[in-house]
Length: 218
Image (cartoon, rainbow, N blue to C red; front, side):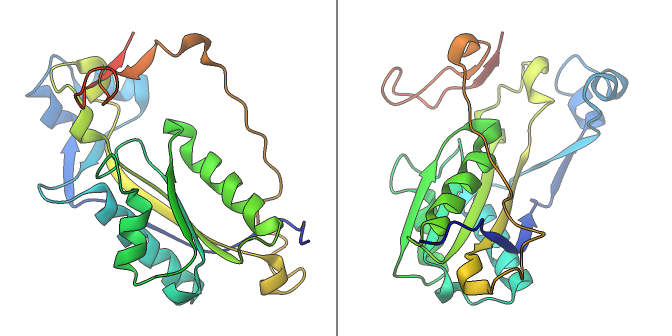
């Protein structure tokens, strides 16, 4: 059993072309560029175009990560995708990316932990590579939060945008001992506390409301 942490072989990202600046938001809600910057440091955020979906952003980031790693998509035997805004309830958005990459083997699934999702996804992939269950993994974080924002709520619509990032994780057993030792997953610790789960949430869902809902912050 290989218990050496997985190494990061490559990384990539994708941002939509459209930029929504604080000055643009001044025309939509009661806010100012100064107010937003003082509280968040944000000057602009990217917004997915009509017909541009979470899977598209995730796919572009995945391709960039594979190119950065100098790796063919067919070498990947695990895709873990962190997203709170999937294309569909099912199939998993990871499966859509897997299909677009031409991969017909290995595992592909989504997981959801919102802001900490990429950390969770990386930890899951690392553990699966550590045990030898998989050899090479794509970890993707992708969101189209603009689709669940209430553009009349200045407290939330200024905070979020759309985009994706991806890394290629490789088993040290495959990469060669020590070759990725200084750029791998050195340690991880996952912990959740649902005490304040009502402070930031989306007020929709297929089970409770049968609607997509909007992001809310109390």
